[in-house]
Length: 384
Image 1 (cartoon, rainbow, N blue to C red):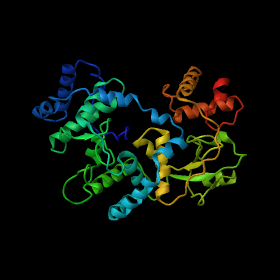
Image 2 (image 1 turned 180 degrees about the vertical axis):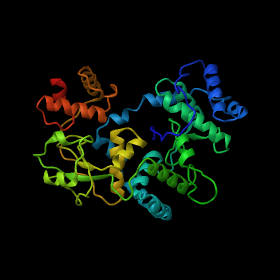
Image 3 (image 1 turned 45 degrees about the horizontal axis):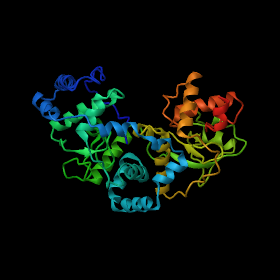
Image 4 (image 1 turned 30 degrees about the vertical axis):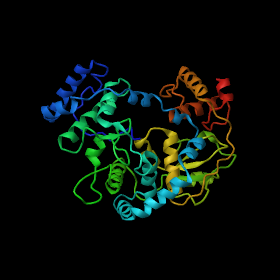
């Protein structure tokens, strides 16, 4: 689910100005802005005439508890033998498309296969929310209107050029097609991958895959470089040096006893990632790993997607280790409240162990003389 689109130069002044307004006023504001962008008034009127708030979209937006799961639980839920086998079958079926992507963009096929699998189960489940209403609802809602109002306006642009049907369905957050792209990204990076002269992200796998690759490339994907690798770490490692905010060279990590579990470390800067602390799985994240966060902002989702890409490329199952028990959702919220009170910016108390919370946990662990591995436990919560 992509929630951080590459911004286009669209006329979106004060994008949140009309959020929460009465629906007629909200539509009137959208009409003025869309017309100013060059969308004909009659097109805007046709697009907005039957647009409505969808309560199911709001419910889905508020109910993302799956991201509260720890990495091992989450990854085992998303990655199955069937998904791996289907991924390899899809790789063979669309071999020419993946070869073209690797030649043009330097993006390994496993990366796109992982997104394809997680977003829509290789195109089989693309979502049944009406896309216009989903974007209309989220643009009107005052939680993130600055993100969704421009997407709604971009959908009007697609509608104006005949590339958007008002009956289009997709994910609750307005993404469309087999790899789930938002309207602004479709405008900027939609690609005709099958050569039929049309861009159809819902029914054409080559179109969807090439469009996704074009987007990742534009976001800064570094060609022919890995994103993630499983590693082994010594018990003597200074845990305060781990985390995405502490990258170092391969030589530096090797000197500290860090090694690739299944292959040597490449000559790249990387960061040691311990999703469940020093006793759990261990990975090295390279610069391309950061690009995943432009697709989805959940740390656990991103790590699982990047890991699944390595599995599709032949890597073995990670060593889960024996991590210390984590916190429940309520305990995580209590921890985030306490961290906020101590002056840390954790991005709100949502019960999700994201990167900001991890960084704050690591700082507090170091202050308290605990192993600073960024994995919060009941002991840490009690001490705080």
